[in-house]
Image (cartoon, rainbow, N blue to C red; front, side, top):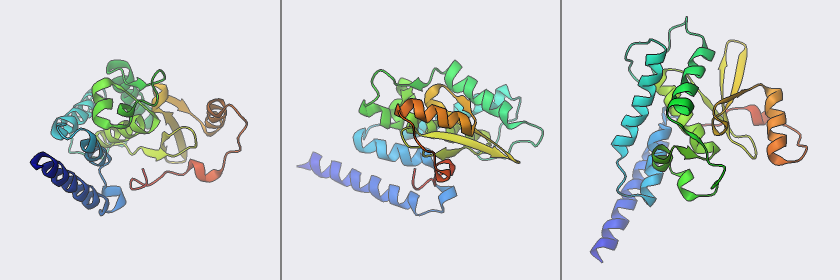
Length: 207
């Protein structure tokens, strides 16, 4: 009885913390914190602080590759650093060095949906790997937006008059809008008509 009560009490605390997080302005919502709170329902003993420290370490490694100083989180990147150079460094750290990859063999494994297990196993589904990409990017100082394509979640970065789409599930593959169209058709295995709204970023709250 006591164990059941303690579990229910802890779950209520988690739900309250999650609601408080979502009550903030959308841009202020920390996706990594939100994802780890969700994971604590399934894994109540997970070390949330340790997971966040690991995300910070990933960002620190990216900034080291870019020869940047230690930052405050969300510090803007210097104007002379080209976005594609930053994206290349993100891809190198996450996919080449750390070995994160899409789980093609066991796609529907529930652990692919929990950020703590994605960090532990280095594999996940499109939305969790995209969340990882967004959060490490945020810590580096580059804004990465989530794009809720049907069949396959991806991310993008927009700067000046340019935009590039990135497929974290595919190891950080860079795509144009035309590439996205072909990519989604291959995944859906049918001809699909792309709608302009599919290319718009979704909110943190929606994600």
